[in-house]
Image (cartoon, rainbow, N blue to C red; front, side, top):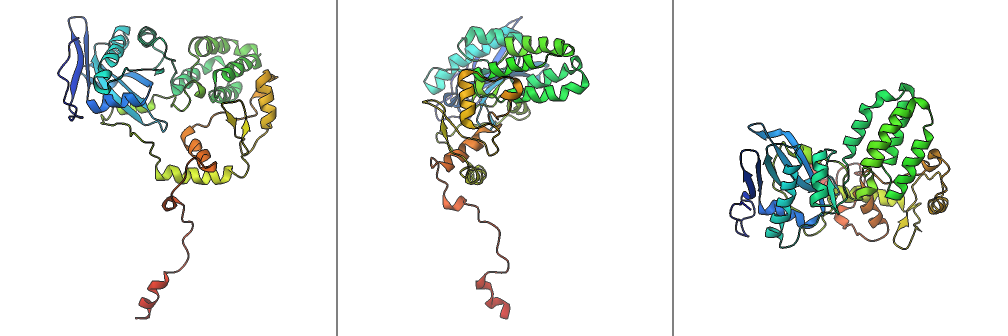
Length: 352
């Protein structure tokens, strides 16, 4: 492989090229730093996208990296390529990551999730280089594509159908998604919806189904952070320890104080526990019974309980606080409303 010299271990932020290929038909140059590549050891979630917003002489760039639970993007590097649609460019990128990451981290690069758009080139490359990785789809990309086909649906029926699609996106595992998507297809018996049902089933159930939250739980199902990063190249890395911001702790504390009033966890199985919502329509035990026997009679019946939260991290911290797994220091406790009047120590000064 053609590559430049690897910087010294103490030189974290010097740009180097771990691999490049130049000939008449191909152009591939991967650029990164030690600090950027070191972030890959903290995550098995890979995001890849091509962009024309940032280019060189009209050659596009491929950007790869990962995102944390708060949807903050952490780049691994960028690749200058001759095309962001060809499978060969993505294959070169994946091979480069598998070869160059161990140079910095001294461990094999493992990918459990490969977040990409729906391009055939990306799909082919992922299946070849990371065949065991699950292929989550960018949720905003999915809903935009569905809304672009709204002309297949009568105007008076689209709003409800749009809400139903957004609802099943919050399924917490594949089993529930299969139930919900099948019930949704069965629900729409109107012949006027036949064309959209065929499109939706073919594209977003049979071909690319992993756009629901449970497909990559605790990972963001959006490439928005990656796409925005093309406008500013930043050097970033993961902390060895979990750091919870003061704002998040304060928000989680307030939420946990509310949830502890009604939240009595109920065992779901030997590994998982269900915590009820603050406004349940169906009892948790009734839902567990329906789940175990797949006894949901219709999509409307299935829809009366809620799924994953959009920002899992906030509610996870809140539950950890509520049940004693995370202790918030006193200096982060909300002080409450300020008392009226000045402090007692300043009262003497007012006499002069």
